[in-house]
Length: 404
Image (cartoon, rainbow, N blue to C red):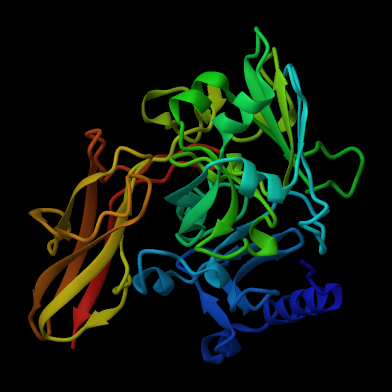
């Protein structure tokens, strides 16, 4: 699979020009979107294999899914799926026929697996799971924090097909004393001083979550190159930082990995709720891990309007794998709540759609809200989390609407 480099750079150039447009042109232009945050102007750019998405950065590509797409169905289309890379050295050509995943380190039988080997030598597994960037919604943090200023669209839900990681590890045979498994892909730094992007999971995390797969299909098709073609890790219930794209290396180690992306980056406070105050110091941190419970309305937006009469409000909810027990809806800003109707269950890691009827009176304004309750008992609250990395947002979302 090949991305045309000239087309790739042309798209980036057009995006850069769009991002310098004045505010009057922004309001009039269909190629830009204004998000509800400081410096929230985003150009809509169509990279190869992608429809126009909100661009945060052309290099490395950071592309956000426009939120209205989540109202179209429970699965996010491949060409609309968000993109997040850490390093700028991304191959624009990958030959699936020659690509290999090397399994080595503290194993009894080192492996060099092709994509064909994964397809033919291991039982295929299919799972629907949400892939969410650790920094999804970072742009909504207050006080503002550094990093990619995402709105709520740095996530997507897909049907992934691949081989179980535990089956691959069983084929290799782990030696006694293994503590973690490290993952590396084809993503490379431009400068030699930049740490390579490597992630690690403990054996307990891997074997407790037997649903981790090495995926070669996404929604029944090959992965888009920007989403990790030809194979990527799928770690259901965990944030996307562990979903290694263009996976090429699996290493069994007898230590706790201390590379930059585990020891320094992607850390959260080891405090109740993983939250701190902006001036707080001296707290311990741990690597980010499982996702929080979240819910959103998908057919209304904050500051929008609805027609008078009976309206159906729709949305999505998800957590880290216990599944959604209920979604509650409020039309008075959270003073009173009632249960929404849940849609079809695509599995405990998937988006769960919901809907509820709402009687809108002409001339009035409402503050709509939704909150999800997971089977684990985890429930969204009205108190937003805050940490200096801008991770784990799970606050109840509200939408002020007027009635026309």
